[in-house]
Image 1 (cartoon, rainbow, N blue to C red):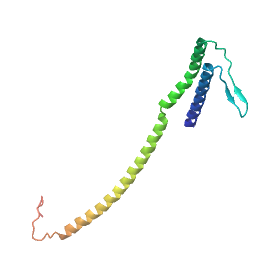
Image 2: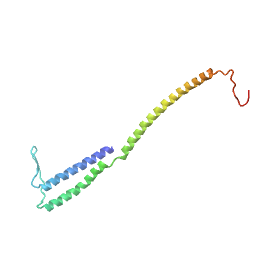
Image 3: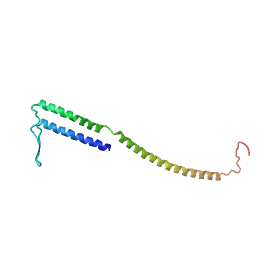
Length: 142
């Protein structure tokens, strides 16, 4: 939902900037009007801008009206959503933990197999040792 809200706000800001740019075009070209011939729509803006100082003032006002939208767009492009990063990191940690748990389970199985082989080898070694004729040293004699 957060991504949808951010996208919606960005689209509104882009629309507002486009509207203000259209207003700037009409301010600086007062004799030209937008005409659509298929529907007979004529968009003309009759602003009394007799001299360039009035056009400059109208441009400054339009730029000030565009400023919040531009700031919102810059913030949307530069500010990262740390909650999304945390969710990605948490997912990565869960995946890594499951891999480590699987690896640990396989190592436990290998350890049990090795212990079984080692105990069998130790039993066979004890059975092969011939203790006859050898003196064993003990702390207390037998």
